[in-house]
Image (cartoon, rainbow, N blue to C red; front, top):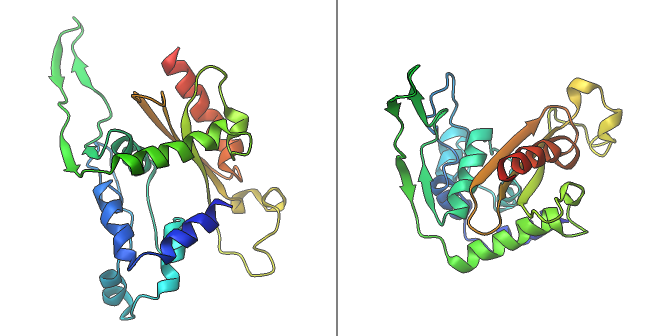
Length: 230
């Protein structure tokens, strides 16, 4: 499964700080500054953070869980969308806004939100292409977890995900999600973008208690992308 791939990548890293470095550049672990109340920063752990928070050293095995978005990792939907946007544009992180501009009743623009760069890092072209190839496969490859949402003649890329709602006991961790009580079912997540070349839209969806991203969140993102590109 894809988790194993990321485990192996994490094993080659010197420190979890290598993950944190690029996560921070992509806007994870910090507020975006969007004009919405009660935004939270989320959390991307580092060795220093754990030492300060728990007075314990970082264990290399913990890096494997961080690599798949578990362990201490916390993020928000807007951060995921912003991170993908930064990835596909080559490394420029912009401050997101709720609206592009405000007009009066005569259609005259009375306030316009100018794009503001929050961070800029040079991402390797080969790395971006490799990630893009993987995200393309999630939706368009017959073996991809989101293949059921492919749009013939309108390719888009993305990644499905699952958010565990409650901590399960060892004997319950593999219990089928649909058999759990509704409020204990996993959330489904999907983040995608289109077109594959020169993307113009990124969509991030969290489907509460949908059990999986492919069934609950990806269909919503698919319809948004299809509507935008038509």
